[in-house]
Structures are given as structure tokens and as C-alpha cells.
Length: 169
Image 1 (tube, rainbow, N blue to C red):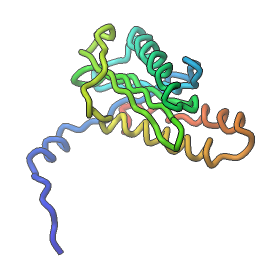
Image 2 (image 1 turned 60 degrees about the horizontal axis):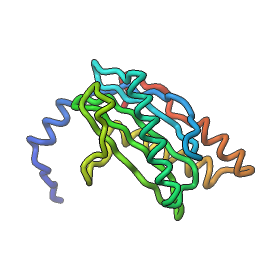
Image 3 (image 1 turned 120 degrees about the vertical axis):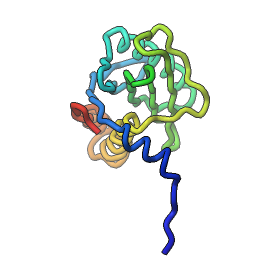
Image 4 (image 1 turned 30 degrees about the horizontal axis):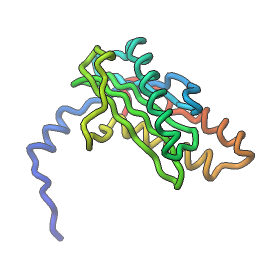
């Protein structure tokens, strides 16, 4: 049996620098014909300020208007992340064909007015991916494979939120 050496220096650096981050549900919002579940993630020493949340909702509204033209089914989740190296907003929308769209915005820490679309190829970090993984499971289990009327399924989905994690995941 052989083992693969992934290159210990970069991986070791990541393991030594990893820390837990607080994750909190910020509510269900009706934006641009969508229901959006919004979450906050905070790096140690950082907080998601009200103006950052407002900017995240503004960016989400604009993105969801565009997503309507890409086959959106009207359900989405968003993340406003006060990261260690800057601020991020993610808007994840469920679209036709069991697919999704992800828009990522980034800017300097504490300057929500400077948020811009992220460079092509930027993907969710490990903390953001935890929220998206929960939301994928909620969408599949509560809406696609759920029971009851569509309205009942969406109602159950809207209440299936990741619990607050103090210094979580």
C-alpha cells in the first residue's frame, strides 16, 4: 500500500492556523421574488456590523433579480462573512435542473461600500462551505424529497437553519 504525500509544509501551515468561527442565522428575507436565508460568519476579533448586513441584502437583491433570468426557483441562501483577510458576501440560488448559482463578492475588512464581484474562480472557504452544505441538505430533504404541499415544504425548509455556532466549525 502506498501513501500520498500532499506536501507537508502548506498543509501543516493550514492545520496550525485553523480556528473556529462563529456562525449565526440572521433571518429569512423576501428579496426580488425569492426567499433568502441569511447567515453571518465572524472570524475571531471580527463582527458583522449592521451596515455589512445591509450591504449584503442589497447585493443579494441585485443578484437575485439576475438569477430570475437564469431559471431560479425562488429559494436562496446568503452569507455575510467578516473574514480574517477581508469581507465576503455569497449568494447561493437554487435554479432549474437541480442546479445552483453562486455569486461571491469581496472587499476590504470593514468597508462594505467597497464590495465588488470576486475574481473568477474564487470559491467558498471551509467556513462558508459548512453553511452551504447545511443548506443543500435542507433543500433536498425539505423541498425536493419533502412531504406535503409545495407551500408546506417551503415552510419547513425556511425553518431548517444552521444553529448558532459560537466559535463553530
